[in-house]
Amino acid sequence: MEMMEARKKNGDIRATMFAKGLAFKGMQHENMNVECQDAMKKRSRDGIHVIVGCDGAGTARLARQGAEEMSNAWLEYLFDNEATLLRMSKTRAAEHMAQFTRTKLREFSWKYNCQEDDLASTAMAVIVDQNINRWMSLHLGDGMILRKHRSDTCFEILSMPEIGFLMNQTYLTSSNDLAKHIRIRQGNLGDLDSFAVITDGVYSCPLNVLHLTEKIDRFIEEEKVLPRDDDQGIAVIYQAKGKGSVWLDILV
Image (spheres, rainbow, N blue to C red):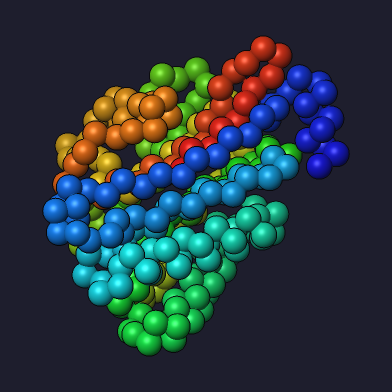
């Protein structure tokens, strides 16, 4: 907290924090009167920011509940343990999160009296700790994580879907060998000013990064996305320059 206050006085980063939460039900689920199966979460305090997105598997009987429960679990755990995770190697962090995910999924299956596959989902997250100028991304399954440098106009892809773009063909929280499939990336913030987490309903194939950037920018400005058949979830951490300071907003 003292470090953050000193930075503010020096006209550095993080003068103001904002948070918004949105997931968009697709037209297919709207017509079927089915709940949105994307769950997007955020938490922000004292220069530490975590965003999480989970997409319930189309084959899972309790897809919405699984995405909601796991996104809440990841959010709480990543935020409370970010300092420890940011010091770990990528291999150790993946093993650590795999064990946590398996344990939580087992607990959720007891809670709902169901099989673990009934609650399966993907999982993505970004941790930013501005106090130590570090970030980490975690990615299981499909969806994408993107980042943008301050001098760039477009986002670049940081983490692609594993396996590919085919529907229902990816790794999930119920999959075997989770540690091999939770992909970790980390580094110094440097001139990075934005991160985005998007579920698979946001993008199309062939992939167009310019169109993705336009979608993210529109969401930031208008809190809207163009309707699509699939559910859409977007989480964005970005910095916008102001007079003498920089604001870090989190839109989820």
